[in-house]
Length: 369
Image (cartoon, rainbow, N blue to C red; front, side, top):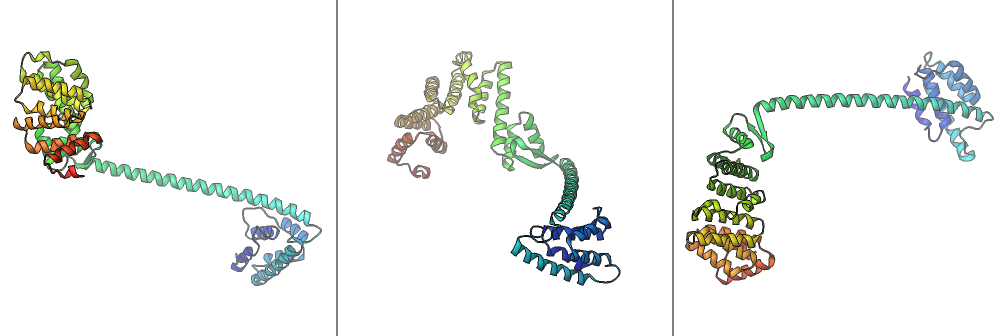
């Protein structure tokens, strides 16, 4: 269709000139043999109803192919718009004629058809777009599937440890796979740490898996040191609550049969469980029992010292730590232990402990914060 004729459509926005807009649309559809079935008889009757200017437009459209009269067509449309604007400003209507009711009825019938066609086109467009999106999603999904296949041939992930993209067949992959399903030897755990594959999840899995293995050995063979190791590893794996029932059901560890070292170890590790769970009276009780059995061992002394401080007996706790140092507790370990205990104390106990330590000449950086 001629460009100028197309441009004529823009002169009559539907919101301001619905009658003119619809007539031009019908005219263009008739001329372009659009999907709408507009016969020459229909458009002829409508143009007769609307007046001579509309008849002239129909005539010009019917003869567009014979001679180039598109400029004349556009000029007539401009003139009609001027008249329509004047009528709207003076009479509030875009067309003033006795046949306006019939025109309005005819125009509305065309509008309804056009709206139905537009809706059908919109629905078809949405259907095609949805189909394209579905096809695209399917292609993307297939691409990802192929990428995952390729990835899985080369790498493996360990989401439970927060470790991904480990090349298959490597020493790290082999150790982590074993850790997924059970116990690894301490040498492998140290290797993971040295190579940068260790983290909190790996550490916890290592100790928990080993603790479960020790506990199984204890239940099957009844070897008391397996129970000591199980309790200790549950503590290292930050799962003291998990082993609390075992501690309670076996205390006071009569199966140690007079072996003071064994009984002291069982009491000390079990007291540590109570300490982890903020049950300081119980941890103090077991630590004191262990100290009576092995008075030269520093381990019960550290448990008694920590328990006293956490209960608010700051001076007494300090004295027990000094006893631990005298019995072989390393000063560096003491510094770290003291900081750990301080961080777990209530605000009031922290205040008392800080005052006590500063008064004794301790100058820790963490104590000043």
